[in-house]
Length: 270
Image 1: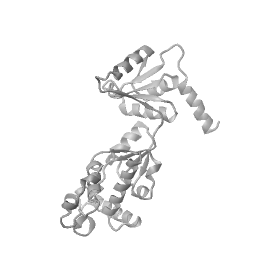
Image 2: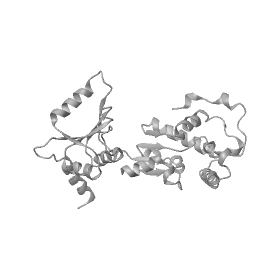
Image 3: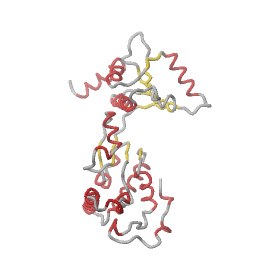
Image 4: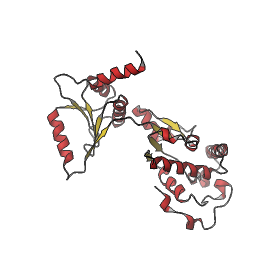
């Protein structure tokens, strides 16, 4: 059986309701859920198999509704995910509650599994990147990318981009004072300078600025961006300082531009 036919067969199995039983599976995402991360993984797996599902925003922590099929229920059991089998009447009551204009809830229909990229450097330790740890545990497929992929125009291949620990200003998280004598810090600087030169940039700050601008283009074109930790504030700082040099000599081997504060443009941020 070809891969295509196998997927078609699995698709019909997933859509096959259990005769004589309720037609909907509710996966709660509140405190009653035993494994939130695996629940997200099952939701992604359902979408990968072209099954339409519903996301109940702000209802019991952002619960999921799946068509009731034996295959989906077995997957929930295997992954240790809490769920409930609900009759149609109960589902109608839930949806009626969500539709009440007095409550802050909404139903979002999900149809397609996004292609996910995680912006993360090679050689990092597993505990350095919470995003990849979470996605791996949840069994949600993703691709690791870094500067070369972004600069060479690879972002449009993805639907969703995750950022974690990164300093888009080229200042290495301003760890110089406390850690510049540490081997890991020196290696980070060396690797980044080598990457910048390889991609045609004189300085790491210029490379990171280009990356930040391309990510902004990605978002403007409809791409989804999820960022946390230093990836959040340093990204907007890099955009606002794109027309000046805010890096001191210990970061890019030359002084910052005089009076650079007056040239920072916050209208350029997301």
